[in-house]
Length: 483
Image 1 (tube, helix red, strand yellow):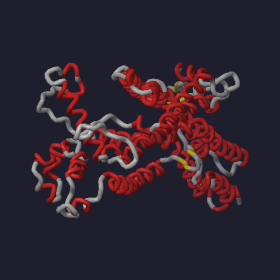
Image 2 (image 1 turned 45 degrees about the horizontal axis):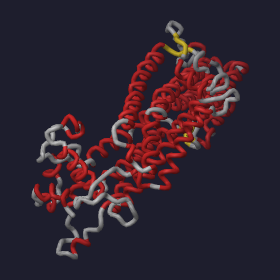
Image 3 (image 1 turned 180 degrees about the vertical axis):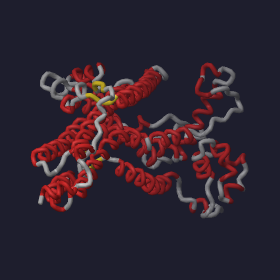
Image 4 (image 1 turned 60 degrees about the vertical axis):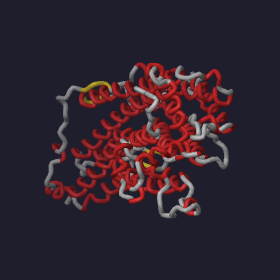
């Protein structure tokens, strides 16, 4: 009966998979800088080295200073009446500045997770990259070229962070700062040219290389499933063994890079929330605009001494910093999705393995259903029914997950906007007590609306609220000078 069933199969399993034997293969890259970081961040026992502990210590010190004195994280500013912008309970904009500073503070411990992942993945001999076969397993020429191109971009990105740190370090008269502000300012600059460049120039390329190796091995298992006849007991037993080993492979990938991936993602989103909180903080934006206008007018006629002001004159008015903050948000919110795209593609290949097992079961017929279904069911039930793939905590990151997260970001931002706008300004009903209308927008709110345009000067006539249209341009500019 089994022989009749074998002859009835419409497909010859031995010829379903075509091996790309003519393609030139290349060894997966484990670069010199990755090996160096792996040795520098781990001691002889594989535990964190003194250098990694030092980097962790500076983050701890920064967090401690911020907790003791949250005001040090706020940007300088001057109220329109000439008094300093105060960061204290009850002051205008206090809640939003507090949100921004707490998010900014938490972003640095989050990014440190990427350096800890560098140690776990790249340490000599027993690092997870070595377990995966990075540096020994061969990948296609196309994969190798893609990794090389990405590595160039990642290093350019890291150099930009490094330069930002150096510019911050030498850009101000920090020696006059009080200790509570001087120390965290120096630590932030140091983190910019140490932690962030290492995360983008070492961790990210190492993650992509490990992902490419895992993808090659997953494709090899899929090819074996395609060409193996399930009637052959010994051959199918080998397929089952290879398929179950693929779960171990993805666990090694997750253990080596999962927490670092989570840290980079949380860092980018915390920064975005921090910038957005500042962007809609009317009192803070007025104070910063007043500070910058006074600074630039002070250098009128000497623009070379105030490069941030451009070609200034006494009539020059610096536009709201809210535009710049919002531009950063536009970049930072989707950046983790780009970061996750490659690893999500690898996880989705594991989904393809399940599809191939189902196709084999269809071709083999009901006689072999139990044998094939056992393997397919075991794989589907991994990670609480999510299947096998790159795991970050309890979540498998694949393309379906990225689509879901993208939808959640869009929906979640609606809630965040509502809450932060509620904190941004006092209710306009207060203005009604002085003769205004509770339904009218205040001048501060008009300015917040205008800041949402990348070109604020073009947004005024496009706002579809009558009270905004009826305002004179002089009134809108005048919000900077309100007491």
